[in-house]
Length: 264
Ligand SMILES: NC(=O)c1ccc[n+]([C@@H]2O[C@H](COP(=O)([O-])OP(=O)(O)OC[C@H]3O[C@@H](n4cnc5c(N)ncnc54)[C@H](OP(=O)(O)O)[C@@H]3O)[C@@H](O)[C@H]2O)c1
Image 1 (spheres, rainbow, N blue to C red):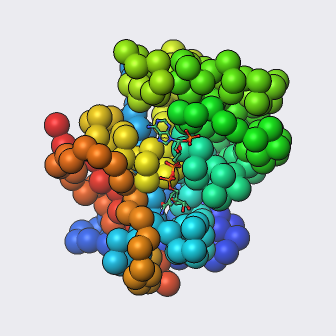
Image 2: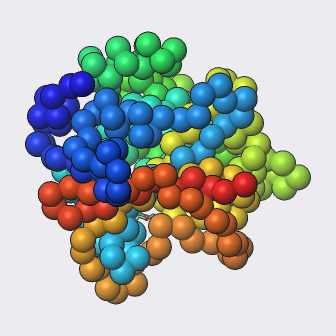
């Protein structure tokens, strides 16, 4: 077992809630077990990671940063380490000024042992393909991102990003839309099956609507935001998807971290 203070430079103490001997402190080794993807995946397993306020807000002042805390950042890093690819909507990449994922030496070693490339690429989802060539996700990254876009937009998108990213057309019947199942098939073909979707609400809503979200890792921040904040998943289609709780963790600041997996 590793020393939690060494695991976490911010000094967060996680506690697994619930009855029985499993409850108690959680260090990084334990986090890796609690958040392990299913073994031997033949298709993409889509894990969503999101943060919400107590009143269901997914952002304050246009970003989710104000909701976060040290524990949330620690879990964010662990979930990134476990993923083969980080999928994010272009709106979030723009709003949150995304850059490429960063991995520590320890994380790189862990990833090598799991047979993963040292740093997971970001896969940007964009229908329009309109990406500024100086977007940090394109310029500040160790590994080139993937751009998952529509057939209609692919040529323009490649012109926008130049050689900074690989642009892949992911349409099905409608050449103007990104088909989420096609996008996942593209990732699976590249061996990128442990998918981490970091949102935003439009992209997460698409996966939910198409029955493609396998699990949700939800951080509940002990805050109220009021106003007209978006929810963590938005869209046109109404669905009722049943999930089962795998575990619930808390920390000294009163955040809750739940892992919920789709039933059936
Ligand atoms: N609380 C949280 O956990 C969390 C997480 C992430 C983001 N956020 C917040 O959410 C807000 C952004 O929300 P958002 O809904 O605009 O985020 P988003 O889903 O990241 O971005 C929407 C844009 O991404 C592309 N996109 C998303 N889904 C698509 C799909 N199914 N097909 C094709 N393109 C798709 C489109 O880009 P194009 O316009 O280029 O076509 C679309 O306009 C920000 O305030 C951000 O801070 C919160």
